[in-house]
Image (tube, rainbow, N blue to C red; front, side, top):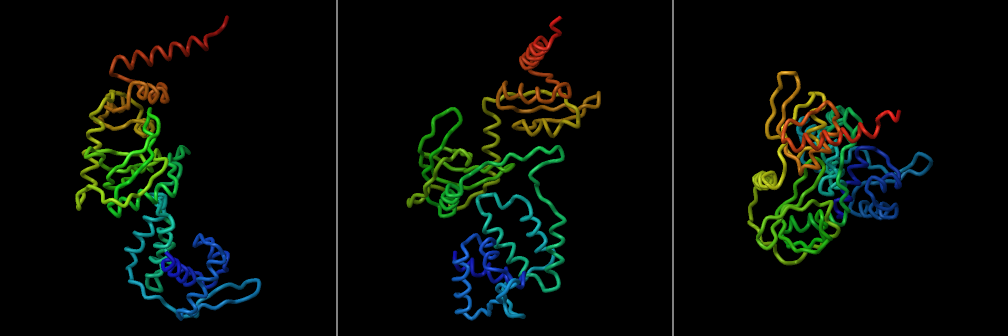
Length: 323
């Protein structure tokens, strides 16, 4: 870890010419004392770092000093910078590593392309926190220590012990064989097996995790994309409800955000859209359609139409004119 931090420190000084110890500490997420020790280590290793005292002082590198890093062309660096410009730093708890990698990407560019690529990357915004309707994205909150333990076990191929709070059940400990991690719409899932059976765990429901020294029972090669498709198909084939809906096109995305899956979609003769959707259960479907008011209509099943009609009638009765 310290070697990575020293490289990051050098790259920061290369990009900014002069930085104070406090600024370096914030960027590297360490204490000021640690920064000062790192500066001493770099100087002892022959890296020309020098200090300038005074109000505008700080640490700098001698002009012309360059680290030996593999070069990238403009488009390659731009692609990496754009990928790191959204909320990708939240995925799998790799925020500090992503920040360090972005500094190395910029430093690896030819001298004349650094500012150009950095400015171009600022023109891209990937997955902002809110959409045009000011709705905030729902992001799972996963404690850092939990994420680190899970990630280590996945990469090392070790068994993992997790304290998991499944929906409708009290939290309990279980030992699993981790296969991989998948992030979907800012939710992170652990794909694993338990006693040979496939299991999928949402990491926000993992209350604690512990990497075990025993080797996990899993194949040496894995196709996560195929495994995820297969598990998604089994999930959608479970005890869910399929609903036929007619909806205003302007409310389509809002409806899809609440559904588990879209099975079919076609334009309706009246200008609306006709969708076949999968919901968790009847209560889930009723809640989702109720949010859209008259902009959506449940066509089937009849039980859902009846429950929505009864709910609307009860509300109308509640607000009827007392006179």
